[in-house]
Every structure is written in structure tokens, then in C-alpha cells.
Image (cartoon, rainbow, N blue to C red; front, side):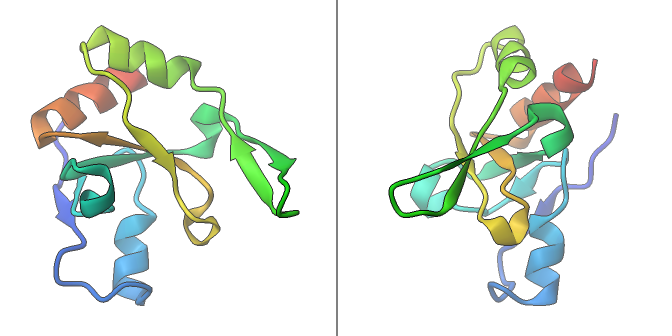
Length: 114
């Protein structure tokens, strides 16, 4: 499967253009949380796959917890250790997985969807 490699580089955070890229699932995206995570490529996993449940924290906010079985199986199949975080509620509280390069991200998506 071919993917369009998208990027948030040069987009102003919280603009409609930036939000549009942040909300694209199952497609490699460059530059999201790169400074925080140390990896340049990420893939947003739809909640339909991770089936999150929400739990109240000490701050009284609801925090997601994911069923990551499918994600972990796909990562294991391509030999990648997990590096993930939860997107902000603005972007659907989805799980986002990070990779060193677009090839590995593409392999992950293909494995996840098989």
C-alpha cells in the first residue's frame, strides 16, 4: 500500500491545517512531538483498533487506557520496540506510535491492517 508522507513542519500549531494533519490516522506523519519523543515519524492509531476506556485520575480528568494487543503484535512482528503516547483530547485521545523512519512506519501500518 502506498502512503502520502505528511508533515506538520511549517504549520502553526492549533490551526485548521495543523489539526487536519494531526487527525489523519494510519498514515506516516513527520514532525509530530519529535522533540519530545526523539523520533521523527508517527502513526495515529484509530480508537476503533485500540478500544480505549477512560479512568478518572487524581486531577479529576478522564485519562485513556488502551487495549494495545493488536498494536503490540504488529510492532513485535516487525521487530520494533514500543514508543507511544496519547494524543491530546483535541486530537481524539488516540494512541500515537513513533518510528525512526517512514519505511518502518509503513511496515507497521501494513502489519497492523493484515
